[in-house]
Image (cartoon, rainbow, N blue to C red; front, side, top):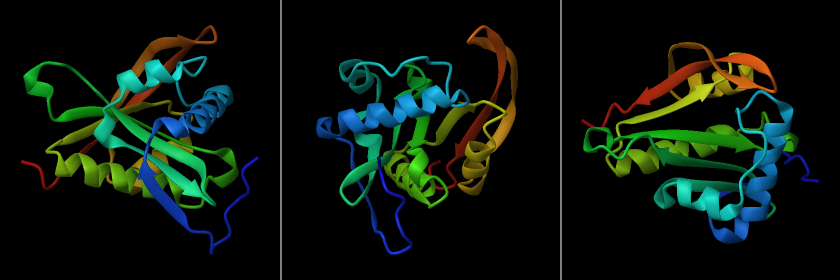
Length: 171
């Protein structure tokens, strides 16, 4: 179990590496199990996770050298017109939510994607996930709209809010 960082505990961000895989997938599964993070029902194998996310835009947050959160992006499309658009995920260990870990991860991701010329970061968020919506709003994301009954989750139709952040510096 990860201890809650004290106000003096330093959070260090690092590029995600294969050595982080067990902790990353554990945190992912915790989010899945809570029921308001994703339509997924189980974290994938590391090989699938690794292959589906862009290597230059994956970060972990470390507290006392333990992974306490992660963020990563995937391509939205292979079409050249969408080269500057990615979909992201951000997951934080339940033990450290509300301590700024999610915000630090999003800020690193935004800096990384802007440096690479990516102009739009998007995600689908369940409307019930108030904490995620607040985090994204504080990082400059806006809700574009609601996709009603877009998928079934444990036998129940769920809506998803489409959120995006358009870079003010990438033209």
